[in-house]
Length: 151
Image (cartoon, rainbow, N blue to C red; front, side, top):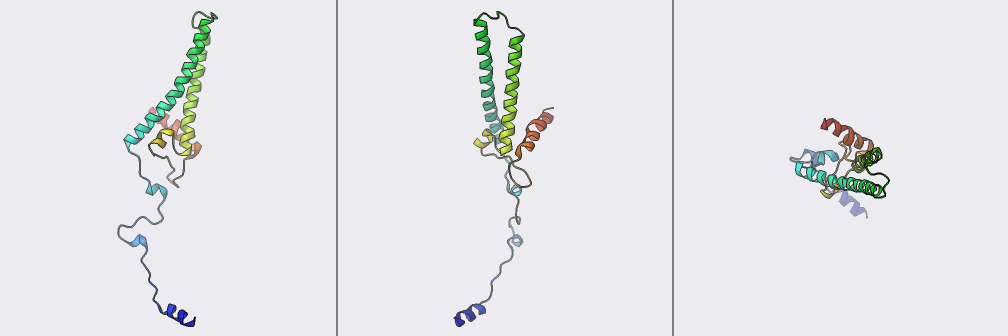
């Protein structure tokens, strides 16, 4: 055993320069945001279309429900002409549609991907750590930010 210890002690130690000092080396300890590749306009546009179709389908089902209720009411002879009740019913269902649409975007963006973004492999992440933005930042992004942008 003494021979093996003396033999290993005599072998020179080989050291390599740190990877960050080599030409073309990656950034040392890169953050996820530094590694991120941003989605192009086309992918984001298609993801937005998919999300719009999903939200539109939900809204369509709500409006069909309203029209069925109006038809049932008119067929029963309760009211022969549209009145305030029907207008209130339409406003109520439109409000529900808006709440569901806003909730869809906040919920899925808070988790990092809407269904449209998931289909196109796009992810929303925080710059600091690459994690999903969370619901507060998703609200600020999807409601406040898009209202300001739209104005």
